[in-house]
Image (cartoon, rainbow, N blue to C red; front, top):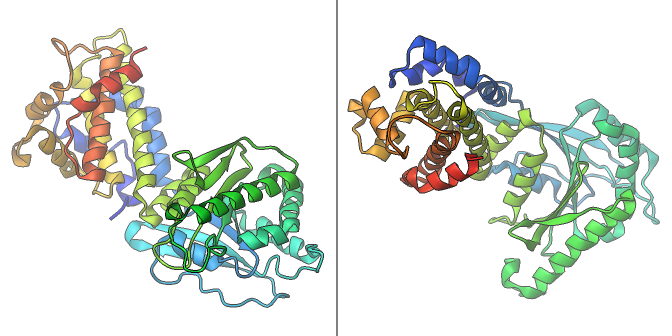
Length: 423
């Protein structure tokens, strides 16, 4: 199950569903929609309603593992990119439309079959190869380029990187960002050696050296020096990210057989550099939970900021009755991002779990009683810190419940939320 865009047509109108379990009148509903959540709801609607397939352009020399990468990245058991042997003089790109119907998503992947195949002994790239890639970029307008190389190809194919630099200079700002995938990192492993690399110090060192070498080659060829950071928990083994909007970074991969290694890191990096309207279908197609959690976090922060604005307003509207429907709408959207249906039952499920209330008996007064226990202090008056912090805490709790299956009271996250929104 995943987000069905059809469920999100006219998201603002669907606030009426949430109003069913609150005492929100029409005037309050209109105020929330038009004055408080207008921009936030537009962004969520845009993310979902205007989502489109990501367009990925995969290229590299023969034997680099382009088709294996496509299949691993798509998280498909069957082959979606059956690319056979390519003759050195054959240049033919192919567009694959990868469908994920059960997840309401699709991808467009261009496999540049044959590019960089016909090379002279001194490593020069033929002019027709550059022209073919230029035609591809003009025709397909990909969102991101994925350059697949092996450690041996890095050392033998410096001209490849120079060719990309020349194309970037010609296309200017229209040239998409590029990520380098260092595939087959096990190729230099000692026979009988241990996999995975974190259990093999010698292999680990070899992979790190290859990452750094590729990084240096890219910088030399493009004539730039990048500030670099490790991608995962400060571990150099799993890749580097460049401080550049054009050159994304280097990710090492093992795709010979399952379990694949480090594909999640690559997925996260690509997702972070895709245009906003292409991220949802990329995340849903992969069934990679962390990408959906990132979207959920964005919703949580947006709605928390909106309620903090209410709490800081010098008007009588700054009370629990007003932020309750906003919080419930947020819970519904977070539940949907975790692949629940977008409806009242999803919200009731969470509130019931948090307050121990039977779903069938859940009514406005029970909702208010359940929610108000998270708000410290006497009465219903709210400050920006309390309003925003309470919403933040509830969103965090909802993420734990829907994504991780753990019932954690929002109280656990309240101090963190109040600190974030108390300025």
